Length: 425
Ligand SMILES: Cc1cc2nc3c(=O)[nH]c(=O)nc-3n(C[C@H](O)[C@H](O)[C@H](O)COP(=O)(O)OP(=O)(O)OC[C@H]3O[C@@H](n4cnc5c(N)ncnc54)[C@H](O)[C@@H]3O)c2cc1C
Image 1 (tube, protein in one colour):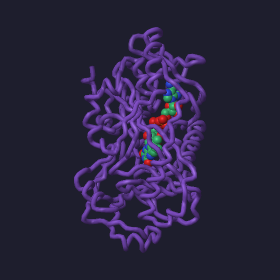
Image 2 (cartoon, rainbow, N blue to C red; image 1 turned 90 degrees about the vertical axis):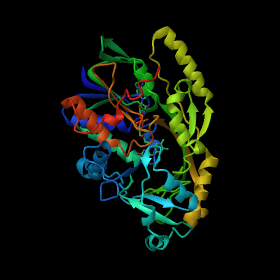
Image 3 (cartoon, rainbow, N blue to C red; image 1 turned 180 degrees about the horizontal axis):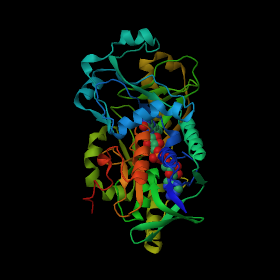
């Protein structure tokens, strides 16, 4: 019997396992594929760090605790995760970017609030980073940067093992044994895992696990394509840069990776039947970035949904699919490289070596679900990171562990309540 079974061995499950084991809990992590297999190893892994800035982030917030957590990660665990402290920069390329930033303050829930009268002028940026020789109006940098996502997964895995956590990889949770409102065991395709508490950190598949407990949360699977160059010898620019039409980061090995920008994230919404049912809840979020979004029905998902529905009628709500591979979008990633090359002209000499896609678990307000499951007495959820699971990582892991071990967390979890869309039918 484990104290806590964690469903999902992505960033959230791994980090939570470390924090729980650190507090003396006996932890078992169940992962249906490989550790970090879904969103985590496809991520840009850009994050914020503590420091003086225009946004005062309170120390009791999950965001603030996460900044501190990343700042101290390498020292705390004795691991090199290639933490790049080059900054979280907003690049204003043209008047359209400026107008957009003046009118809006967030992209997918991540604040863009910057003082447009206090941009670092291009000449000053180029004096430090000559590769940014193209046209732009200015740049604003907050403390932040990025990490090597693979190294983070390996580091958290080692830290959890060192603290006594156990892992069952290739093990898919398919349901729960319940005694009244209490989970007594997590059922998998192979065996049952008896436990005192459960943490559901299953990323995009979390709503299906919550369904089995009678809790419904709206969540969309949004496909996020990205492209990478081969390693480039020169260090071209610092940290993580977001422009209106692209984002870019350069890893320690020199690879430059591109994604969608703040003005046009151009994410692909792979609509499911549940999304159509929850359309009213989604409307404000979808309208917010409708120009950049593409909506399509993914027939593989739709078929899966229908199969699940039929199965649910027969066996109860316990089916989670596996092995779903989101398709890359090469033309999209090439257009990001082309936009970036207008600011960093030397990028025009490089081609994409690799394209890939990940799915992110988006909620209607782009905030995650972190807290107790309303319909079960001993279950927690930490999912729906809405494209910022790294930004919110260490604070989330700590909050869940404190909640389970101490009964409450010093961090404010009110914005992330699981039942905040409870008006759903
Ligand atoms: C292209 C891309 C770029 C991104 N860029 C950034 C960024 O720059 N900054 C940032 O903060 N965030 C970014 N994100 C988001 C961030 O990567 C995610 O929020 C974070 O990785 C989520 O981690 P997770 O553990 O919650 O989910 P996941 O990594 O998806 O992990 C969930 C795990 O649960 C497992 N699982 C699901 N169901 C079951 C089951 N029934 N039984 C057993 N296991 C199960 C899955 O196999 C999976 O491994 C990006 C994401 C993508 C895709």
